[in-house]
Image (cartoon, rainbow, N blue to C red; front, side, top):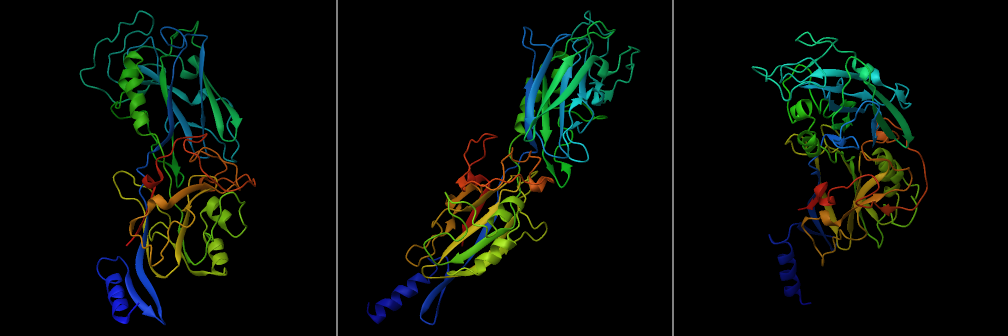
Amino acid sequence: MKTNTLKRFVALLCSGLIFFSCKKDGGIFYQKGIITIENVLDSKPLVESGTFRGEGTPPVIFPGQSVSFSFSAAKNQHVTFASMYGWSNDLFFAPGNPGIALYKDDGTPVTGDVSSQVKLWDNGTRVNQVPGKNVMHPGQAESAPKQIKEVKGMDDYGNAYLPASSLMKVSLAYNGNSMFTLTIMNNSGGTANETPFSPGVWAISYVAGGNALLAEPVFAEGAITANGLTNIAESGDNSVLSNYLADHTGIFTPLSPVLVVIYKGDENPIYKTGEKDRGEGLRELAQKGNAEVLANSLKAKRGVKEVYILKEPATTILLPRMNNAAGGKVSQQISIAQGEKIAIATMYGFSNDWFFATEDDYMKADMKEIRKGDLSSTIGLYDNGTAINQFPGAGVTQANLAGTPLQESIPIQPVLNPNEFTTLPEINKIIRVTLE
């Protein structure tokens, strides 16, 4: 190429049409730009929710009958539910908030009879009649809705009630690998408060920093009823509250500090699908979000030019979007020579050993193949194969939920979607990577 032609080519390359600034150092052209990684997940506060109902017609749970449902849960998580005291105007059974504890302080699962944690509540929307099969529905409305309150032996109208635990037996069974089954038995037959139970709802909140993200998903004591609870309390219709809970159920996960590597070579230096973990620190990143070990290993590798660990200043991790607030975001100015490539890795925080990473050789920075803008389509989600998987965000052995991973040793593979636990959003709706 003639000298003048070469100069014109370089001038074009470094013009405003190219997203990197270009410089020449010792005869090698390199580019400067900014890589940004964001957690763009529109997170949900409930990890699981659902409904239950009797098997007959109508689908109520009569005295002597029971109903069960199963779920996963981690330490500090609770299960809650609600079901109508059928022969009342607007009373319902539910545990006190935040729900029934599922693990003891030493981390062992709670099993057996937990009926003592269930209470009887007045929804505050109807004048209570004498409870029994002769109750007229819906009955007289309160002049103004009252606050939800516990019925402790007698309601505001002088009607007497046995303790909820004498009418409803609730028990927990542990199925292993963070999975429980809760059974509700109607024990009210032959008592002064015999009643069927209506179809109901149940829910489990995510826990972050030891706190439930939605600690009162069904009701709040001392507040006015909301979100469809009245439909259950007055008529046993669980559809409205079920829809509300479903809208608040989904995925929540932070991303760990992000590892960014600039390298030259034919293979991604972080991992390779189909191979087992190399023992270079990816396990520590995938299980615990610790990128330091892998960063130190990469710095010693041939062909690796730069290694960065990007941490969100306030939290170190990248939180998802919550309550209309933006998710976590980190950026780094980088410099890339011709033929060099970029790779990233970050933990799917609420998992046992899942990690997001650049798919092999996608994020090239070759002078002939410059890509700019949104590169999220180059990111995959992988199972590191070093820890037994559990429900993401509800696993008792997940390190970021105060657990100790149960080790395994299988090849690194993409995470299936849907998988055996849940359906995840598309990757570009969880993590966004841009190069400008």
